[in-house]
Length: 454
Ligand SMILES: Cc1cc2nc3c(=O)[nH]c(=O)nc-3n(C[C@H](O)[C@H](O)[C@H](O)COP(=O)(O)O)c2cc1C
Image (tube, rainbow, N blue to C red; front, side):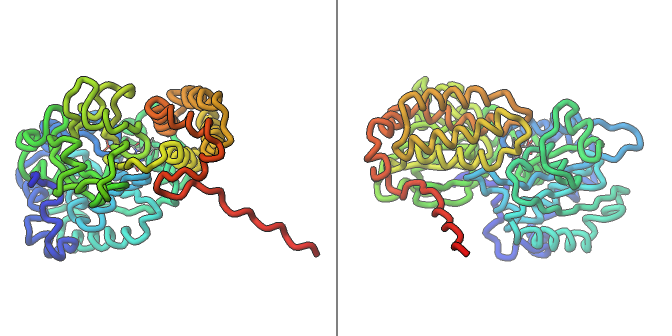
């Protein structure tokens, strides 16, 4: 059994509630911090741990914290990014729903380290039932003296507020999130200035993912150096992976970052293999924004090494032959799946979610959806494949925020690795709609009936 640091107590009945969490070692890390550590020492431990942000980019958390500006008399904020809207990613939901006090304890320790007296949890609107769970946990933590004024006699004050989003994927991008938190339309800001200098209400702000902040608890409990002994290389510790698609056991798994992709997919401890003995065709291992990789390059890198579930190994070979860890949304496709149809589904998502601020993304995502729809529906031309390639190339790197890249990469990777499948759709227009790929093909919404004549 793989070692666990975040979900080790998830099986305990009632762990969602303060009493049970506390009886099972909860808030011991916070106690240790308030009794024995100065704020900078907490940041030092996080640096030693090698923790990388779990929201997608994998930026070193301790380093990010050390960038926080500390001008005299200006408040600082910590914002917990719980927007989790990336298709395939649902690990933060699990943490918030079943281990809310782990997150509250992580926020408490992190806020202390950063000198933030007000902390926000920005949660996606579709997680409609979770704010109640978080607010109950905040109330109970406050009643037990872990929030409010002069916490545990330390002189440190903290309030945590939960803010619901309204269902926009772009509000997961940290500066769009801050705009939304300020009550404005959620469009990304031009950087610099970075949030560490001018963030929420133009004050220094750290934005971190739910899992990142929850992980601060085991880091303090066992110490940064000990934490760094888990995992391998620059992928220290454990990582939550939400696994879905054609696997026998979809769910949220905590892995130590030293297992192979093959073990993750086929072992009984994790995904349990592919249903009905089907063959693996491809995988999107880090949420919908990362490049799809075909099975041969997924299990073994282009260098012929076993592909591991680590930041380094998943991205080995760059986008030519590799992909990314991203947010850990692991989507498996079996031999029956149509890559063109999947790519269309993703393109439709990004077109819908583009905030419209930058024209390459606003216009390009719409064109990609349109061209893909034609190819998928047997109305495509061979030149459309090159057109599609050209459109994604013009979006990548040409937008204020990385949503443009996130929309371009899946299309680029699908063409790079599965061009023959696109060509097959063009060459077999009458069969394109009927070919059995296992699931129903993408269908247009039913036409709206014309209004009756009066
Ligand atoms: C379009 C878009 C959506 C994003 N959605 C999320 C999200 O839902 N949750 C998240 O933690 N980070 C998301 N990010 C990344 C954040 O901008 C930011 O990098 C992250 O919250 C930093 O936290 P971390 O360092 O702990 O990973 C998104 C980025 C983009 C461009």
